[in-house]
Length: 163
Image (cartoon, rainbow, N blue to C red; front, top):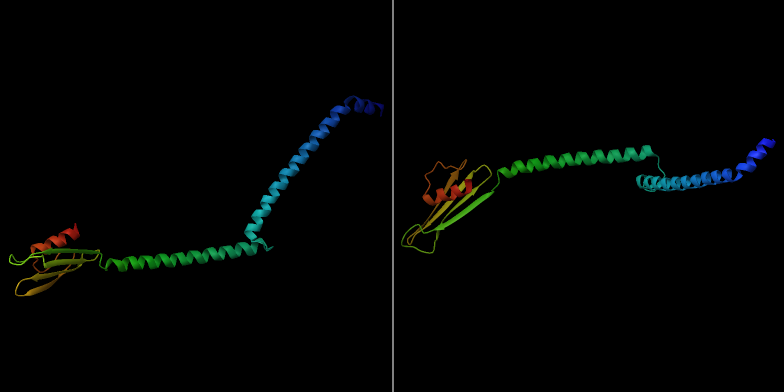
């Protein structure tokens, strides 16, 4: 017993310093753990939205919502694709050229109008204005070509759209 007392007397300062260092280390560890616990609590509150539900309910609800959103997205993508296909048949290219069909008239009152879809299908409309009369022509176009003979102006309008 005297040996222990002797050791304690000789090394009391060292023992106190070591214990104080361990106490400071313990304090810092507790403070760090408290901060981590607060962060975890904040995340938990975020996921539970403040309710004290269990994780199974939260995950099931979230997964159900994600699956529903995914199904809605697939429907929207299908609708978008259908609209793209539908748009291919809609008018997408229009070109108008005004000109004088006859030398004795002025003001570019004659015109050729080409209206085509994405596949270069559509119609060429032409109106030839003269002093005595006015003539209109409609010529179908398939794949950028017409089975009817086209005037130079009609050819030029089609060429500008199909380049």
